Length: 337
Image (cartoon, rainbow, N blue to C red; front, top):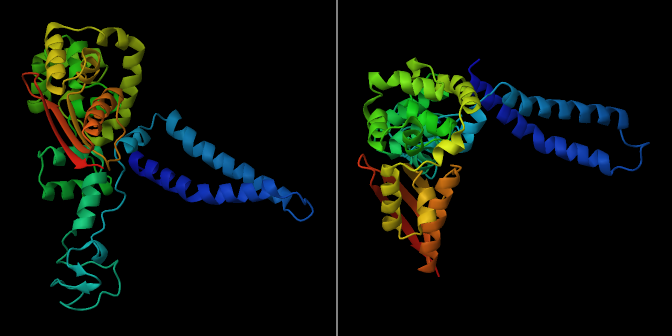
C-alpha cells in the first residue's frame, strides 16, 4: 500500500478513536465503586487503546514516514468530491444545471450524487485551493499550472498516483533549506540555484549537488511524491555528515548585498534582515494550514507588527527573490479599529 495512503488511514483512525478512548478512560478513572465498574474489561481496553496509539504514532517515526511532516505544511485532500453539494449549479438545494442526474429546476434530494455537468462551486474551490497538498497548491498559487491541471493533479494524488515535484521544492520542505541556504551550502551564487529550480540542474553540477546533499543523482533529473520517503532518509545521512549551522553562518558577498536589499525593502534592522534573507519564496495567507519555519515567522511577524502600528491587520503576504537576488513583496491588509 502507498505510504501516503497508509499515513492518511492512520491519521483518520487516530482522529476517530481518540475522543472515544479519552471519554472511556476518563469514566473508568473517575469511577470509585469498583463493584459496579468493569475494572478487568476496562483495564484491558485501556491497554489496547494505548497500544493502538503508540503503534500509530511510533510507526510513523520509526519508518521515517515523511507524510506527517508534509501534512503539517498543507493538509491532504483525502477526497475530491464531484458531488451536488460541491457543484456551482446547486442553488440552495435546487439544480440549475443540465446534467444526467437532476433536471433543471428539480429539487436535489441526495447531495452525494454527481453528473456529467458538474462544475466546482465557489466555496469548495476556495477550500481545495487553500488546503490542497503543498506540491499541488504552490504551483497553482505561483501560476505555474492552470486550474484544470490543478484538478487533474488533485485527482491523481487522491488515487495514489505519483506527482512530479521539483527537487528543490522537495529539499525545501524536507531538508528545510531555501535556495539561499543551498547557494551558501553548495558554494554557488543565488542565480545558479534560481536557474536550477526554474529550468533544471545543469549536467555539470548534478554530481556536486548529489554528493553534498546525499541525494541520488537521478532525483535531480526527475522526482515525484513517491520519492519523499527516500529523500527523508537522504536528509538523515546529510545531517550526519554536514555541520549545517556552521556553513549557513557564512555570508558571501552576494548574500551581504541581499541582506542590505532586504533591510532597505522592509525598512527593518540588519539583524532581522539577516534572518529574513534566508527566505527565497513565501505565499502566506492568514487562513493557511502552512507551518512556517523560523525565518518565515520572522518575516510575517515583522510585516504584521508594522501593519498593526498603522491600525491594520495583515491578511496575506507574497515574498520572493528574483534571479538577480532582489526582494519583491506584496501584502494585503484589513483595516482594524
